[in-house]
Length: 134
Image 1 (cartoon, rainbow, N blue to C red):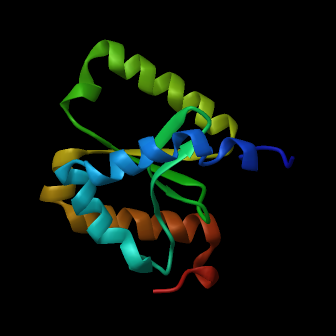
Image 2: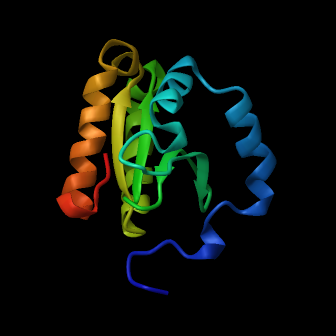
C-alpha cells in the first residue's frame, strides 16, 4: 500500500452499503443543495461521491481525484462533545491522506458560489492550473 493512501479494503465496505444508501435517501436539505452544485462533474470535471465510507466513517462527500472530503455541519456539530469526535475523525482520515473541509449547512444556502469558488481554487492548488478543466 502506498503511503497515505486509502486501501481498497477500507473504502465502501459492503457491510455498510445499506447504511450509505439510507443516508443518501434521507439526506439533509444542505446535502441536497451541495449535491446539486457538484453532481455530474459540474465543477472542473471532478467526480464527487455521496456518503462514501472509509473504514467505519461515512463521509458526506468525497472527491477521489483531490482526496478531499467535504463535510456539512449542522447545529449538532457545534457542541463540545461532537466537536471533539469530529476532530478525532479528521485526524484519522488525514492519516489516509484525505483532506477534510467543513462548511456550515447555512453556507450552502447563503453563499453557494463561495463554495464553488473554494472548490475550484482548491482543485487548482491540488492539481495545478494546467490539469484543471473548467
